[in-house]
Length: 479
Image 1 (tube, rainbow, N blue to C red):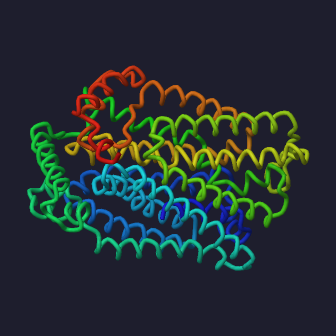
Image 2: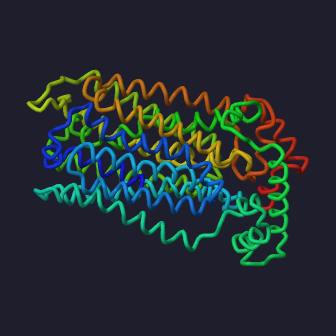
């Protein structure tokens, strides 16, 4: 749903019928309209923790679907900017709740050996939403009426309805069931998920005992307020979770996704059809390059995936900045739209670099930014901690989407250079501070994060635990 909403507005912003209906909003107006969704996401992710703990992950997802659909209906029927902004904010509430709850729900259901792969499906679903929205917009931009933008917005209700109905057939999180004293129900769920319903399977019995022990310990150390999340020893994990989401947004991915037609037009693709077609292809690249991460993230590991992704993103941005800065000749048309007037060669280089950046992000930061925070926290703080880290994602997304229309219009290659620097710096941050979590159970995270804050120096301690058999049982069982 978030992917579709992100992509659908990116194209609609360039529709003449939409511009005339809402009286040609300037860069500030566009920023407010775009960022209204992310403002709602920020609020939704903050309140999601308590709702998910009280009413279950499953019911929380269903509630969020209803809220999102209400917002989409308001957007579809908008008669002025205020109504559109309110609708996007309400939809954002639903997306914010879903973005926090769904990865946590997947993480608690998934076996450790494929947890990264399963949680990565969320990012793949987002990219599919973007692809579908791009091509729906492309097909309808020929329509010369309000239908051109109302129908794409209204279609958002369809995936929300599908998810709502599908959740009736999904189990409750076994960890949530144990936390609420429903041990027998948790036993049944684990047996269905791990052993085709065999309640006596050794893996099922062992995992249930680990969850019960973890919940019992958590009952003594339970976090009663959000401020306790920033106390030692939990603070380290919270800051890492915030950093993952912050760096994901500071990569500039949503500048590209929200304003792709504008960027392609500036780069030399003249004509509305050409820029929208290039945007549609960027969505396909985003979707296709998420697949390798889904298949191999649990083999590559989180650290290497992020570092290589940052390197690819940084190089693409740097080349783009050089090509643009060295050859651009800025002009503005009668509507105030910026054109860079790049020569043919540099124009093609910039467009190719945009695709390389999207591919590098899709195979790394896109999926890992959802996987990593969902797996590093203990049960007693998982909901609250994930609500904080996810809120950080939306806070940075809100800021970037608010100022991006202004930045795109007033600075060009400098913005690419800023993003390149962020990506290169992120390589060092991941190497120094992010521990590897692939193939570890959620209960193993206490050991993983129990050593030095310098992750690159803590490998020896983890290796000693692996050798002693106290950690890494998952890897041994799967070899």
